[in-house]
Structure formats: C-alpha cells, structure tokens
Length: 219
Image (cartoon, rainbow, N blue to C red; front, side):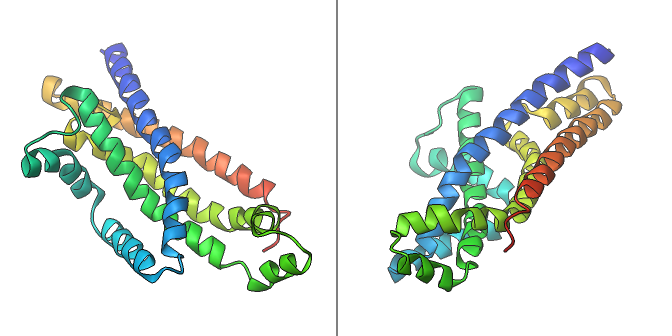
C-alpha cells in the first residue's frame, strides 16, 4: 500500500510542478507588461489596467478558476477549453497565469517606481539612451528590490497549486485526498505535506541564494 500511495503522490506532484513552472513562465513576462500598462501616461489605459488588477487581486483565485473554466460554456454555449483533462488543465493555467501576473505587476511597478528619478537624469546627462539606462543602470536595482516580495508570491504559488483540484485537475492534493474516499486512509495526506514542505524548502534556499548574490547592489 505504501508503494501505491507514494506512486500516486509522485504523479500528482509532477502535475503540481507543471502548474508551478508554467505559471511562472507565463506570469512573469505578462506581469511586466501589465506593470507598464499601469504606469502608462495614457490615463484611460492605466486606469483600465489598475481596475483589472484590483478585481483580480481582490477576488479569490478559486472563484476565478471556476468562472474561467465554466464561464464560456454557460455564458456563450461554447466550451473554449475543450473536454477532458487537457481542457481543464488549460483553463487552470489561464487562471493561474493571469492571477499571478496581476500580483507580479504590482511588485514590478513598485520596484521600478522606487528607483530615484535622479538616476534616470544622470544617465541622460551621460548620453545614454532610455533602453541603455534601463538595462545597464536600473534593471539590477529593480531585481534587488523585488526578490523578497517575489519570493513570498512564489512560496504562495507552491501552495496555491492545490486549488486546481476544484476543476478536477489531478494534482498532489487531489491524489492524497483520494485515499480517504477509496480506502478510508488519512495518512497519505500527511505525506502530501512532506512533498509541499520539501519543495518549499528547496525554493526558499534558492531565493536566499539569489538575495545573497544581489547583496553587492546596495539600494
């Protein structure tokens, strides 16, 4: 029985890892784009982006998952995501990427706006272009500022991957919980906690290493 439980949890953990890494791959660049939209000098655009971010950050991710997955079929009579596990997974990734992109956008915006304006002006005095100022002067300072809050969101994402089970994506938590229904066993749930703690521990160490490497940037 132990081998069966371990195999099932390992399969679920692989799915949780897929959700985690695909969310980061999609949400980081999208979050940067959203942050530029919220900082735009074109007021209607910045207002619209800020309202969208406010709505996404102010409502539960679980609610967003349910609306994104069931909404198109119920409202338009057409299930955009397709049927089966692949369709559910695609809907989950759309919800996760957009949700975390909105959170990341606020972190990016805070990091960029936190750089003193004098550094931009100094770069212009030296004859640097705007892109050179951003990539050679500003970027690493922004990275230094955003690593701690980004780290908090990444840790939260690890635990939030369990939410995809509400639309029947068979991740780690789903597989652990399934043994309660099928065999009346609760101890597999404790092993799911071990998986989460181990993954959290690895990510925490990596984030700590990244912060140390950036210590030479005093901001």
